[in-house]
Amino acid sequence: MQNRLITIKYIPLAIAVFLTGCSTNDAAKLPVANIPVYTSLAVQRDGKTTGAWGYVILKNDKWMIQQFTVPALEGNKPFAGREAAAITGSLVAEKLNNGKNPGITIAELDSLGIIKK
Image (cartoon, rainbow, N blue to C red):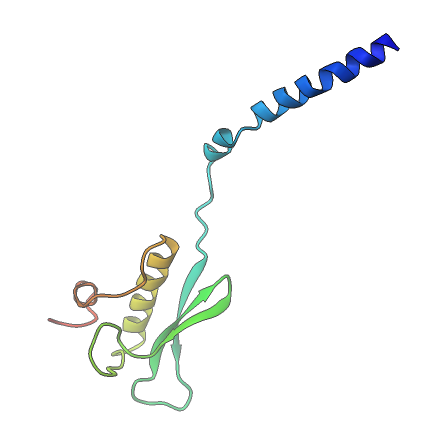
């Protein structure tokens, strides 16, 4: 009977030691895989000849954003082609994966060669 009381007496101590060893600070030190959540695809509209290229942003393979005009420009200016749409979409996905605002500026479009100032 006394052995049983001693065992029960030390259970809270064992739990405290276990929980201290599993602190969240240790978990924060573990390496985290840099797996992109957002991906970008250049797509072409069916049956369109002008303004046919754009991009879609997928979040974990779910369609989230569709863009067939160059962002940041006034009006509805189409992308010049597949490459321009792909480059712009990649930048948007990169920003989202880094927790940044996905908005695109004219300066960014210029630096990527999408437009000329």
